[in-house]
Length: 136
Image (cartoon, rainbow, N blue to C red; front, side):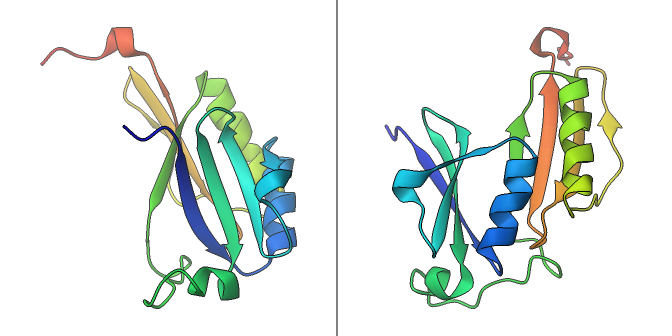
């Protein structure tokens, strides 16, 4: 079975994207980062997001690059430790130049909120209390 995941996202301004995610508290793996790419660490053991400059990203696809400000190409969902952690990260994202695209949703057992990064990529943050999941 696969042991790691690398989500690849095109970005217009790599420096701006790095600064945005650093403001949110994320780190980058310098081994996989340079002037064309930055390896955003979601989980140190196995989950990464490669932020690739658009010209570099184009080398990996024959399709047009989606404009994430106009279309949704992916929803990136991240499990957080608490409702407060969800709200804190959304607040940091807004402070760093991101935006929200939907209101928070509290289903009792799951709480979620979201933000869009400066390139329009959609990030879904959630806290799940798995012991409270309804049985029906």
